[in-house]
Length: 60
Image (cartoon, rainbow, N blue to C red):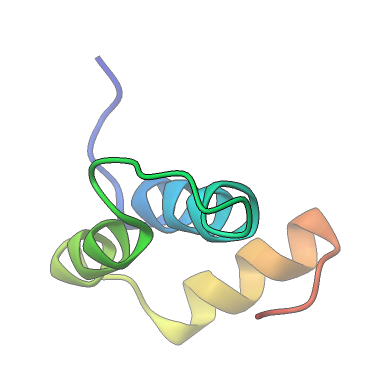
């Protein structure tokens, strides 16, 4: 079992937004729901900036 961490949920949200939503695939939970979950687990702006600098992609 993966420990529930804010960055993990943000990463899942990013993948769903980048791939599934662009191809109009319906998934559950949605990228918006995963982002809200990341916020609930304490996602910070620093976490988001670190994530995007680590993967080398700009923030959408």
